[in-house]
Length: 615
Image (cartoon, rainbow, N blue to C red; front, side, top):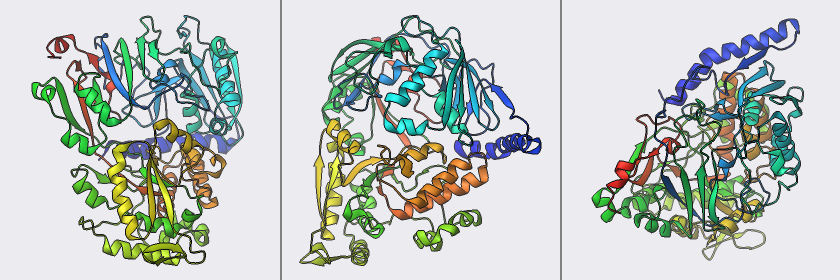
C-alpha cells in the first residue's frame, strides 16, 4: 500500500469518526461548538507527531551546520517581493518570512509549531485562534506579535494579488486578543480545515518594515524578514546569496531541528538549461535536479563524473504528481469546442517520444490526482452517479458511457495514421475540413492555426514532433520560445493559445482547487485554461462542502477528475517515478528521506568530503 493510501485509509478509519462525533455534538443539542486545542493540524486525519516530538523522522537532529551550497536558476529576477503584482522575484525569497506553522514532509498537509506554539479551533470551523511563541523574533530582534499577524492579513487583503483576496474571503474578522494571541473568525458556513491550513501557512510580515511600503509593488532592496536566511549579497538579475542567521530564534524548535544546515545558499542565474548544465559540470554550482531525459541520459559525463567528484543518483518515489501539460486557452475561438481539444490530443505521440526522446524514462500522466486514490477509473460508481446524474444534460455523454478518459496509446512508429484519421473525424464534426491538405473552417474558409508558447528550448524537440503531427492534420502550429520573464507576463495576461504549464499537485480534492477551476477565480493565474463552467463550479463546491466526509470527498474527487478529463482542457505530458539528481560530493544527508519530498533542506556540508574533491 502506498504512503498516501495508508493516510487515506487511516483517515477513513479514525479521522472520519472524529469528524462525525464533533458534528453530532453540535447537532444534537444546539450548544456552542467544541473548542479543540492542539499543537498540530492536519487536513487528513491525525498528525503523525505528538506534542512532545523532538524532531521529524527524516532529519539528522545532530547535523553539523556550516558551509555553502550553490544552486542554479534560469532567466532573471528584478525584485525581492514575491507577492508583488508585477515583476519577477528572486529565487529563494520565500526564505524571508516565517509562517505561523510549518509543514512536515512525510505527511499530506500537516502543520507543526513555528511562530505559533499551538492553535485552538472550533469543531464547526467557525473560528481559529493561534497562540504565538513569546520567543519569536524578526531578524532585527523585534518580537513577532499578534499585531504583526493582523497587519499581514490586512496587507495581503488590501494590496496582495487579486486571487489572494478571493482565497481568504471566508475570513470575517481577525483580531489580536493580546500580544501573543490572534483569532480569526469565518463567515457562517465558510470555515474549513483548508482555510485553517491556509492561515497557518501565511508568512508573517514585520509591520514596522512594511507599514509605509506598497506591498503590491516590486521591492528593489532585500526586506526585513523573520526567517532563517537574509540576503548577504546580490547582483540584480545575476545572482543572490543568502546567509543563515546565527541567532535565528527557531533553530532549536522540533519542527526546524536538522533543517536549514547551510551557512550560505546562493542562486546563480543562467540563460537556459544547456548553459546551466555546462556550468554545473565545470563546478560553478553544486546541485542539479534534472528534468530533461535527454540531458540525463547523454550529458552527465566527463572527468568529474569519472573521478567521482560528481555523484549521479536516481531516487525512486511514489509522490503525487502535478499535471504538467500543454494547456489550451479555451477562450480562443478555435479551442472552445471540446471535440477540437480532444482531436488535438492525438498529435501528442507519447510512445514515440518516450522511445526516441526520453530514453523510456517516463510514464504518461492523465489525471489531476496522479498517483493518488482520487484518480477516476472505470465507469462511475453509484455514489459518483448521484453527483453526476443531475448534471447529465450539461456533461459529455462519455462521462457516463465510457471509462475515465486516458490518452491514446500509439504503436510508437511515429506514423499515427489511425490517430490522424480519428482526429480529422472529430474536427469535421466541429466544423473544420481539409482543403488542399489544409484544415479550414467549413463556413469561413479560415485556416486552423495557433501558437505553442514555451519558456525553454529544452522542450523544442517535443514541440517540433507535435508540430509535424499537426501538419498531418492540416493544422499550422507555430512554436515560439521566449524568455521566462516574457513567458510569465503572457501567462498572467492570458496572451497565449497553447502553453506549456500545468496544474498544482493535488494530493487530494482540496479547497485550493478553487483557484484553478472555479469561475469565482477566473482571473487567477492558476486558472491557466480559462475554465468558466457552472458544472465544474458545482463539482468544486461539492469538494469544498464535503471535506469532512471521506466517502463523499472520494466520490467528488473521482467525479471532478472524470469530467475535467473528458473536457480536454489540456494535452497531458508525463512524469517520472524517481528523482534524477547530481551534485558535487561535498554533502551528506540523513539515512531516511521524507516520503513526499526530496529533502535537500535536511542535507549538510561535509568538510571531509569537500577536502577530497579534485576541483
